[in-house]
Length: 252
Image (cartoon, rainbow, N blue to C red; front, top):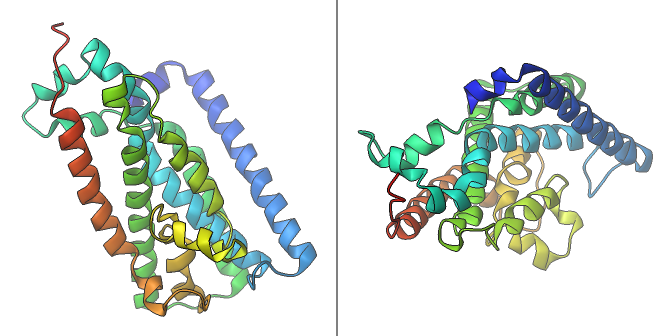
């Protein structure tokens, strides 16, 4: 995937620029909206774009390894794309993921890093070494959570041989958590904390970095992102084992 992207460099660069401008406009509109109203659920405009940047960066880092893989699931069982993976001296799952890297997410990554730097400067944040260490953990955990949730929601396509009926839970669910999830009813907050734990990609863990507390969930919730990430890795591995166990070679 990485090599083919550069074989069509014009389309590749055009896609990156389009994504960059699209998300830039979204960030600007979000900033102006919150700035105009003063705050959103107790979050200032600069805090909101800091959270948005973390939300976008963790998505991009995770999705860069899984998006192409998930889109290929329906065809894997039809044309035997997994045959090659099973002939390699490594996990078929890891092989498919490693060869599905999507370099196009450089637009998301570069933009989110730029916004993070801007918002950190504007907020006048002075972090200790432990804060920076937690920030790195937040980014890694959020990326893993995004990657696992995408895989879990799209993996049924290995059996259905068409678009997974649960894929919308990732695409739609993720979009809800670009804002402080406390703007939603408590029942929705619980969904994004338990069933679809996207709240752990940005909202909960960055409260530690910004010195905030939503007062809705127990304080320990802010520290659970790494545990959620590890748990989802296990669920993803189990789903792959179950859904790929009955894979039959196409004989090609």
